Image (cartoon, rainbow, N blue to C red; front, top):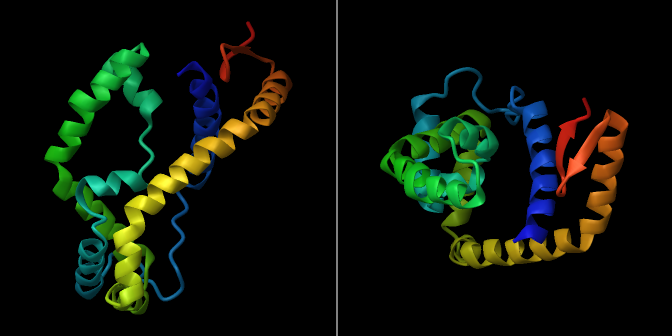
Length: 184
């Protein structure tokens, strides 16, 4: 577990930085509705979410929860506490609110995709190729995760060197992997 903690931290730092830099910059495609989505856009988006099974807890696969902040707010300090809090409290609570998660996904699609795009995507998912893509999505996701673990494991020395260089440039020390603290 310890060897994974290093690269997970490095990837989390990169992802958090990217997400924070782009959080207030939704990039709607040309032709997507400006402002609040129309009733037609919301209906198509809901159809798209249902066609792709992207709603409810499946929405979580596309979300990056601020686990570090959540962990601090909930008082979890050790890996076993974090795991227990996430699996026994956070995820069950989110599951109880899966309709709200579905609504998030619907609103995202309706806001960021044009009506014509949603119609085309729905039409694609109704084709044999689209149905096959949906059928194989879990296997594709698992394969991607497995390959990503291997890639990041192979990149671990380069990631560690890059994190060490960045930490040094900012005057930070590295404690037990990529966990950085400012030098007093």
